[in-house]
Length: 302
Image (cartoon, rainbow, N blue to C red):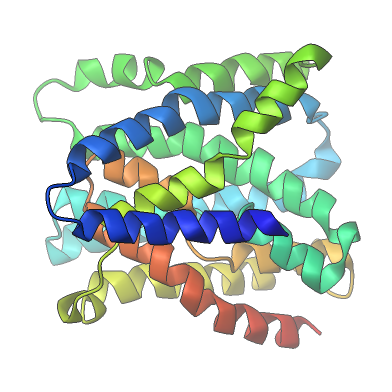
């Protein structure tokens, strides 16, 4: 139980450092993001992805994460074109609102509400859904919307050179070939993986600052409304046709879809300079607001 307090302490540390006169905020953000993308995400991929045993029975909860992500891209991509949003805002909303915080927030919430029996489904949605998406499609969208026009041929190389994506492909191959991560590496990878939440919250804290104009931003409320309300409503309406609404798998699938925006997704947006203040606000303030909406969803599901 001490891990969430350490992570919150890192958030407050970031908030303090960004306001400290003379502190090199941008340089700190660069090094924190480099650590997350070049070390932590590859370590998590190597730790978890090879453990997933491919099977059709896994696709239902995993597909919910993919469905809500692509719907987010379709929705905000369309709104961006119709309403004349900047590519940065469009991509930020598509990525950050499209990804749920299924691990750092999702795991403790699911365990508290449904016990350890709910964790396997939550783990599937996180590793087979959110984590795969943030390591692949989120990078594709970020590259497409942040790249300068006229040089689209460089985008595939930009994606391939992104360290988590390379490790993702390698670990997926390991999963299909049933190659497990060497036992000798597990303690090291686990130790590195445990730093993800606190370091990610440190990065959010370095960017997170609420001003009156932010709370009036329609982009913020559109993104949060999609993530906390519309996405789980869609999952509820569709997946009750495939799963028993009274079963744990269905309830966990809906609840994980109702989590606040994924911290790592906002880090991707920040790293690609896609409306970084909006990205930090969605994942930071979104966690606070989601406490109330998750309570409503838990009551609604029974």
